[in-house]
Amino acid sequence: MTSSVIERWHRFIDGGHDPAVLDALLDDSAVFYSPAVFTPQEGRQKTAAYLTAAAKMFGDTNFHYVEEWVGERSAVLEFAATVDGVYVNGVDLISWNDDERIVSFKVMMRPFKGLTTIMPKMAELLSS
Image (cartoon, rainbow, N blue to C red):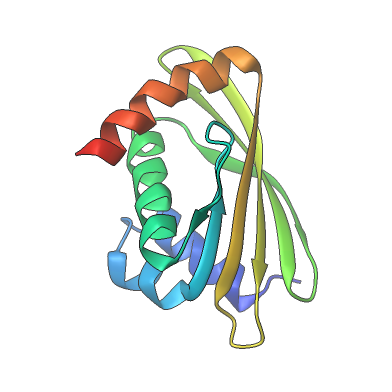
């Protein structure tokens, strides 16, 4: 069973990264948990910035979701990609509220070489 939240997330990530789709998905209180930054990034604007940067960074790769586990108000989506010849594997842990808006988006990534490959790319995208 796929949630409408996850269907809309796929529409954003697979369908051209439309900011309006992402905006409709995120709650004002959304929090993004980065695999590289210790401090949670709180609020819709910061969460959107990180998710948009990630979508752009992975847009030129073979990024794809491998598996999905969906619950009533949360999901775990396993992804894989190759960035600059380096294999990246991870999970997106997504939680949403009764209004079907994302309140928490946590990314965990492996292997370490994959994480260190994406970190400077994300930093560049976030600073632009």
